[in-house]
Length: 479
View 1: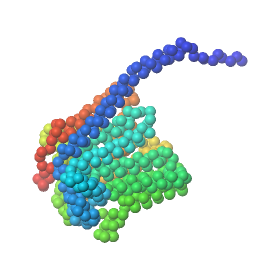
View 2: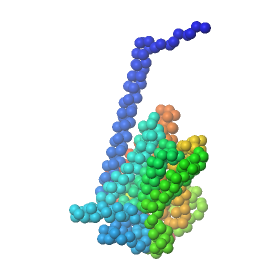
View 3: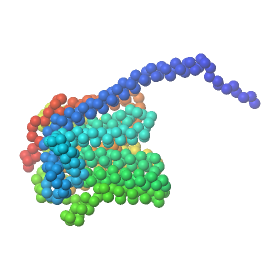
View 4: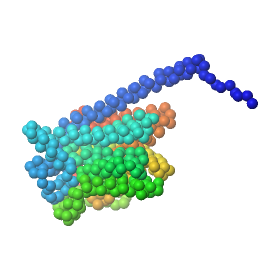
């Protein structure tokens, strides 16, 4: 039997191959450079938006902003923790307020304490950037073959209107969301890198540090508890499916103990001193009991009326009884009118944004289904933490809005802690759809470009809109 001649490439073959590679590079390299340039430009615009808004947004317009400032002013004179019913905001966990007071005292050294109302939004914007940076790194590690996906994920979070307008407010929401995001990204990497079931003592310390991050979220906002529960549940279920509970149990315990020490002490103190873990229905909040609609039914969690798009303001008779319609109008627009004016032009802009936002929203839903299937097939997949956070955040939001049936409790900002899973799964789906061919890629790129440009125009104070009317919606006019 004779050996067939080996296929040895000749110089001509090599030159031809080189020409082909060069031809491909000639067409793809400019496109890649253009894409990278546009992504960096979008990033710089997002930063400029936040700086502009932080300096120009009137503090009193923000959600509970006046009351938040009053809490910080109290701490500027004494570090004593006030009673939960001493003021509107004193029932909130204290980390944001003490951090703001510490910054205020530092400014007082330079006789610049009044600047605190601008400094805190600037710092909040920078802190929110940490969550975007962590998200970008998570997506790059998950899909190194697709750099564009990481940029899409980062821009989806940066250009989410709720993230833009909350960055300008004197509020704890961005800080709480950032702690949650950092904890979830670290917990996802903990599973992906195999440390959950590792016998390395360093893994135990790593789990405890993740618990510290989750505990800081808990000490900033009660919803931080959902992050602790989500990570602990995902780790436990992942280890159980892999039959490695014995090695994973110490890490889960370290996470929970660290989170309880950092964030749980405040709630334990409430129980010991005031008789409850978390204040609910305090007399100081009695005005909320007068807000519409005052009750919720099961159908309120099913109906998404056309008014979500045609009249995106939460006092619309249909939106008053639509939890998810109202929430959607506050995620991708300012349905409460605390940032934008209550005008017909602003409403038309909202309709436009809410239609464009259907693409990333549907992509997120499809991505969650895809991620759940992947996690079901692969016990070691890191999707467990992200999916668990989506589930706990959704369940917590439903429970909260059911027990507090007022339009003011329907806020997209309460879902900011799940921003990482949203951008992660939406970007994955959009990347998969774009790979189907040149036309799907062009359509997706066009819609996202329109969405990002529109958000920049609408939510940059002074560019198109500047709010000069009353704060929020005139809810007292509703019977």
